Length: 326
Ligand code: GZL
Image 1 (tube, rainbow, N blue to C red):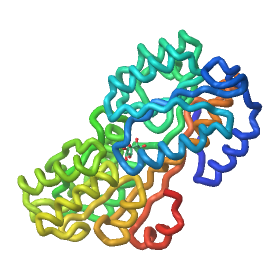
Image 2 (cartoon, protein in one colour; image 1 turned 90 degrees about the horizontal axis):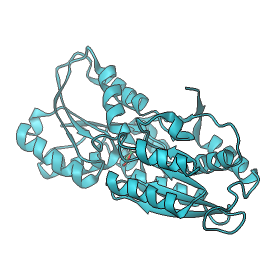
Image 3 (spheres, rainbow, N blue to C red; image 1 turned 30 degrees about the horizontal axis):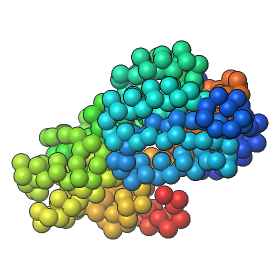
């Protein structure tokens, strides 16, 4: 499968210019807007995290009326069945294109086939699916396995052969980021002294991270845990509340490595409560809009488009936190 690696925000800007320059009306106005308006149904996961809010904002800004779109937005509240029925609703409304951030990887074959049969192209943004790649036009997002590897490499370098008791706050069960971040991290810590003593989903939410961490602390005690690997910042932030409520010092008694690099996570990193963060760039709106235009214009687009991520230590976070766009 050919893929394209898109580096950083600068390229996002270039894609925006390209997308804006593309001929409008490529959708033929078969949706609900005027002749040249491209009607797009966007099935978002929900509003589970700070990352999701930034992603939704980016998508709404890119699929704006000023840019020739009519966006029909649905947030599925992290409910896979509700998300699939939202896509079916887009199909019945005859939109020009459908964009999906799939909550979980499985269960998409039938509805994607229905969209294909209806002649409505589907673009995936953010998370991936296990359905055949013939059933969607393109995907743009992040390399979740690589994010897990980068987080694991920090842990391996930090703890090495030292016996280290780690607990894991997993993302939404069945989601690509949860599966791939677990896999990448495990690859990176192979042969080290890091042992996973417990692992449970916090569903990518702050409350979920706090509740699960409270359970870990009840079971092992602050002194029984050396390291927390959180699949996203929101769960790490919830865990920090639980650690502090139990009289522990996050970032010291229990070191924390997380993924996303949203503003609140980066602030906790600056404050020394998180030790390392791997970025997961949510600003995918311009790329997704460009792909919708290209696909509707009949252009030959590559199937996968990776956006590159970076990593942050506490020192690096202090240098950049005020200039970051999310
Ligand atoms: C990753 C995205 C994940 C984020 C979470 O691209 O799907 O979902 O890491 C979000 O914060 O809830």
